[in-house]
Structure formats: structure tokens, C-alpha cells
Amino acid sequence: MSARESSPTARRRRLGAELRRLRETAGLTSYEASERLGWSSNSKTSRIENGRISVAWGDVSDMLDLYGVGPGETHNRLIALARKSKEKSWWQPFSDLLDKEYATVIDLETAASQLRIFQALAIPGLLQTPDYARAIITRSGPLDLDEEEVERRVQLRMQRQAILARDGDLGLWVVLDEAALRRVIGSSQIMHGQLIHLAREARQPNVTVQVIPYDVGPHASLPGSAGIFSFPQPRDRDVVFVDTLAGTLFLEREADVRAATLGFDHLRASALSVAESVEMISAVAESYR
Image 1 (cartoon, rainbow, N blue to C red):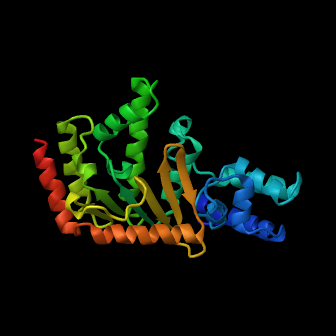
Image 2 (image 1 turned 30 degrees about the vertical axis):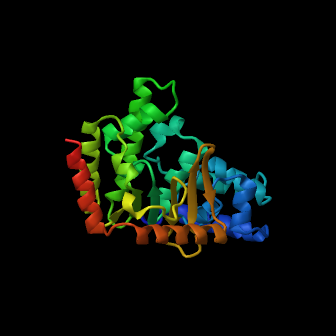
């Protein structure tokens, strides 16, 4: 067996192909399987089968149980393959900080080829500076966080941003309401640094940032924080996420995705051009000096 064939990626693809065959034999669609397994994203099964993400052996065991594959040679072989194909995820040291929804967001970011986000009141995590993230986490995170836990959450958020630096991994398109630039998070000094960073990131080839100015008036906004994940494989449906007070919702019904896509397109049309947006971000940054 060649090194390529024995790589974690190759093992994930072999495992995915076998799991797809077993699911089809069980007469289930990938979305039915995800729903029965209780996964936040109904397309997780599809991404596992495509070898796009690594998968915990416990998830494989649950899939095999669902497909009626009990203890025996096939069960043991696929569990062993899952263990071998499981690369240590970069976020493993932070696993105690991840609830089900946050873990799903990281999973989707890893698999996505494009992410479109609307934010009304804050800069998205993928574009935050450490100081801005620290201020957000301190004020809006769990109230009982000590300094060490805050710093670990900041570090986790910063490490998520590495996906933007890898060529071709993720295209990010962000639409912000002007309020996200004007709302002081932490201090004027923190805001100045954050907006300088935002303007710099907006000039990267895989990052697009647009701002909807106040003088536009009412606009067809999505909820205060929402976005759309798109994936390179045609069989993987887009996934919409919506942040609510009760947690993050993940929507994959065609009607929901269509409505979110239309809403985002309206927001882009209401916003300033990319050049005008960068100019506004830079001007507001100077106002914080």
C-alpha cells in the first residue's frame, strides 16, 4: 500500500465509501440518517461519506448501529479504520469549551468552500482581533469564567481564523450593519485596532466585506447574526445558521436556504461597494483615535 493510500485522507474516503454503501443497503438517505442520529447538521452524514471531515469512532459506531451492523468483522474493521483515519483536530485541546452548536460551526467551517455572514451588532469571530474577542467573551460569555478560561476561548477563536490563510480553503463574504462599527466593544483603543484589522482583512483576495450605512434606513435584514455555508461537493446542501437567545439553529430545508440566500442578496445590494465599505471602516477607525 502506498503512502498516499495509507494517508488519513485516503482512509477517510475508504471509510466514507463503505458507510455510504451500508446506509444505502439500509434504505436511508443521508439526511434521514443524520436526523435519526440527532446531529445538528443534517448534511454531516454526507460530509463523512465524502471524506471531507474526520469522524469520531463513536459516531461510526452509532451509524453502524443505525444501519443494523452489529458486532462482528465488518463492525470491528470499520471502527478500526475510523480510529486510524482520525487525525488529531487542531481544536482538540479546547474540546471542553465546545458545546454541540459550536462544534458544528467549526465542522462546517472546515468543510465549507464559501461562508456568507450578516452581522448587525458585532464583527464576526473569523475577523476579530484578540482584544476585541476578549472584550466580547468577557461581557457576553458565561458569567463565571475566570481569566484562564477567557484566554483559552480567545485562543480558540484566533485559531479558527487560520482557515482564512490557507489558499482556497474558504471564501468569506461579510455584510455588516454600520452599528457593528459604531458600537464600542471594550474601549476606543480596542475598536481602533479592530477596525484597522477589519479594513486590512477586507483587502484579502478571499475576504469580502460590505457595510450597510445608517442612511439606507430599513433593510431586509436577516436575524441579527446569520450566515450560509456552501460546500464544494454538489450533493452537499447549503446550511443556514441563525443565532438566537436559545442557541444556534441550523437550517437545511430548501425553502429556508432559498429565503436566506435571497435575504443575503438583498443585503449585499443595500450595502456600500467593497471599496466604499473599506473607506468607511477606515474612517470610523480614525474616529476612535
